[in-house]
Length: 347
Image (cartoon, rainbow, N blue to C red; front, side, top):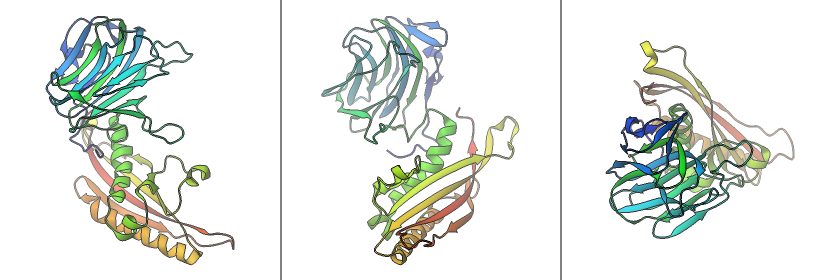
């Protein structure tokens, strides 16, 4: 869907307290009770009526597994409906739309050592395409997709719902966004992480993938423009040059500009590594320079343009040079310094 903008936020956050008193949009319902930092439910559900395409995150613990086919999470946009249902045990769930996908090898009863509550992200877009992200991750250790997909079934009653009419479940958190279907990289649970990684790092990746400049569009595959989570040689060798790695090293703030810190200014640097390989080093050097030049042009003209909220304050490039007769790979780097003023009240 794309990185959530500053107005696409978590509209409701239940953090283990009474869902009818959630931050933002409140749930309707009754029947649960407080159990430490969790909301315990044995026979009730809570809902927010109405809605469009949605994103829903839930963390929970099964003390006793709900009966098989008991729906525990529901998104219904008035046209399509998707449900996460219990399998009647502590290890499996069903994602149910027009078809059913079974997820296994879970530990919702927390029988394993050092077990933690399961985290699920359920989304459904405006076309009824639903996805379930287990542990709120996009890819597994092998780099393969780690989510499950179905197409939503016919609508029953528009809204989002969580709960269980059987068993005993401790609900730790429920977050809901009514702004769209966001994956784990597009809308994060932490506003700090969203402002840092998503809006300052991953948004640059998306900007470069969407560019219509010649080299970026025709010579560098979208799959080769990635965020540099892992810059080890093993990871870099998985991709065939030319590649573009984007990195956000960190961010900082000198001082809060207002009492209470409702608005702050952040300084950060985006680093970009362009790796090329060609028949000779000269050609690799030139093609890398063309790519990094287009990256500079793309970001300079399309980011950091709002003088009151987001500005580029400087840049630095380093051009690689062949130092070994066997060297065939060229790596040019570009660093862009930004200053951004952000609102801190959506926490």
